Image (cartoon, rainbow, N blue to C red):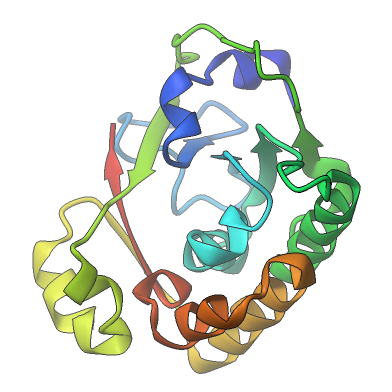
Length: 199
């Protein structure tokens, strides 16, 4: 990953994930296009914890991989709250492999004192995951028509094969698969649909 991509990171990432997409050849016409449909574009997914990539962003990652993007991931924590940091790092790498992100494109920064500048490189667009209310969050596929009407920017919807892949990625996080997470995997829209907004 390039240093300038890392400098894009803002403190807001600790509360939610961010996605930077930029065109590797600098051919973008407008910031909103952000290389989203261009083959060979690059994307950086920034998350707070291992398992966020599968729990919240599997539709985005698989959608970008489907569009032949080069996806990298930056994680701001090893998830060591219960002294499981090393386990969770391995689980993150396994999950990323299932989602199509090579381990060479995954970086884990485990530094509580880290604060980077909020400057974005030229030609870089930033998207955030759209939050939804609890009812919509657990209606899963029943939420699709509403998402199609309400999403103004970018929408990723998984195919049935990709849903299986997303569930497989989440199953890599064995240390986090408590009973309620199994329910989450079954019913959460974030395992099937991602609505992203330009920041």
